Amino acid sequence: KQRFLVEKAEQSRQANVIGVEGDARTADLIGKALDEAGGDLIELRRIEAADGIANQLSKSRNSVYLPHGPQMLLNITDAMQ
View (cartoon, rainbow, N blue to C red):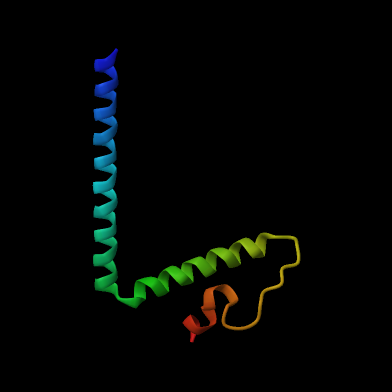
C-alpha cells in the first residue's frame, strides 16, 4: 500500500510539472503574439468583448442602462474612432 501511495504522489508531481510547463508555453506564445501584433491584438479582443456584451444585451427583455463616458463597453467608443 505504501508503494502505491508513493507512485501516486510521483504521478501527481509529474502531472503538476507538465501542467506548469504547458502554462509557461502558453504564456510564451501569447507574449510572442503580442510582440508581433502589438496593440492591434488587444484592440481586437476589446472589440470582440464589446460585441459579445452588445449581443447579450440585445437579447435581453429587460431595460439596460449603460454608463455614459469612457467606461462604456470597455471604452469601445475610442476604439471605433
